[in-house]
Image 1 (tube, one colour):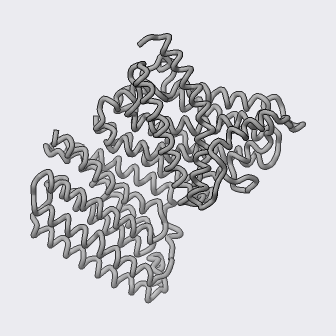
Image 2: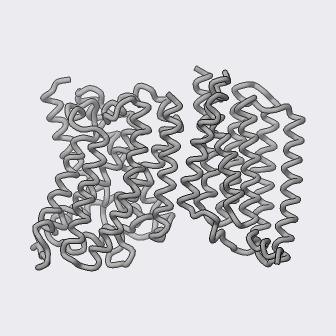
Length: 316
Length: 219
């Protein structure tokens, strides 16, 4: 594969992720509204919100330190770095050699960590509460991600994302193996927890005692808030990409021809819309869990991941 | 090619059966437990029917049909009726909390993998990779029986143990002779009916089906 065009494609797919991500959030909101018999804001509403927030003045608490100002940039930058590493349109890509699954997982956690610090920094009660909850969830979700990911890595023989995708594409039967399916289930639950979706955190609420993500970013306004919201939507997109392309990679381009890339682009959008539909349906059907039931949900997904790694270890 | 597909599908089926068993550790309401049991029985029946399809064994079709009718429909209906009579009594305080019992469930499945290793190595059947899962289900349901206080949950644990043994028979030997299978079904049904009477008696005496209350009899 031509190296230069590979790098161009990396840039293009990262830009694509940044552009598409708010739209996906808007799409989920719109689908949920339709499912609940509401009219709902149009899908492009998040773009308008981002534009509005970027134009507004940022108000910063007197008690806040430099950390508070730096955190949005760290969160955004780490999320953007992840979009370079996950396979979005094509495999293999030049940056596959830079970072594997483990780097992706920990880059995402780095963002979470700084967001939690920023929640604590201004010293408001809500922010601290949100941070402590976020850390509880993250600490429980992290081993599950690692295990689910290793279940995939074991069957592919590599932790490299590109290689895992290639392997699943060449061996379609492997996608139906219990190890794969259980890992998908585990990663799905973790994705819900990490991106603050419904059974763990309610993305539609604001100023409520049970919120997690919203509580941490309560002190932010203006362009800082815009960056954080954007990063949150990109994070959701990254989890969607991991769920769809690691487990159902068909349609992705293996060569850099225009036809293959166009097909990859269309299947990428179709997969995103399908996952958004699943999430919207899921969030309409279920209610938020009590906070004390969340560790139980995460231990369900931990057990799923444990079983996944056991069976894929023995499947080889 | 057919064998590879058969192996894949049978493992998929037995994973589904095991997962329905793990649901009992996570959910608390009796309705969810009964639903999980019904789903598990249907998954088991489908696995048996699939084995029948690949091995061309008509007896297994009969077994699958009986599984579907008896365990997938009849017993869940009876269980629901029983549950309605006791009112919405929840499994509030099992002997072990939910997260810990889920972890124990996962470890029991690991143990099953370790124990079943020589069995899997010995077997030549394409279904052999499902054997540890069936054994894991037996362990998990035994664990449900010993760790839950509510009599109804324990009955469901027993029925799931039955399912695990049936799955083991289907995967390990492509099913036992039909006449034996019918005997086992009758046995399970009788066992269930006797347990039902017991549960009713416990409820009559204590106004609750929490078996912990039976300790009060010593005083």
